[in-house]
Image (cartoon, rainbow, N blue to C red):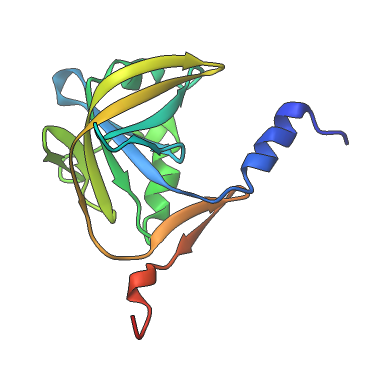
Length: 165
């Protein structure tokens, strides 16, 4: 069976290992939701900016496209269940006690790093919205991270935790 150019592109980009994050935001009435994202990219150090991409066809498009403040949780190696959960719109809700407010943005209690952001800009690009965030605050702790490669989850050890380092 021949692949379409889109299928080949997806498979090719799948050969590029990424980390796995959950972007979280609060909406009307205090409702919090999360979405699994592996398109997180740093943009600038001065000012500190990062971006992520949101598909126009996402069932959560309106909620996340409108968010002015949002958090990013970099998932640890043991957080695959959360990655799978927040990849589905049916299980996007963040329950009380699963998140904390960090610099005005909700972040999950789990993970190896957290970033609080305010939307700096939005750009249309193909079938996605690029959301650029101004970093308000960040924190990081040691530990192995969750990865995504060729459509599967894996992990990368923290190189600073190697014996003899």
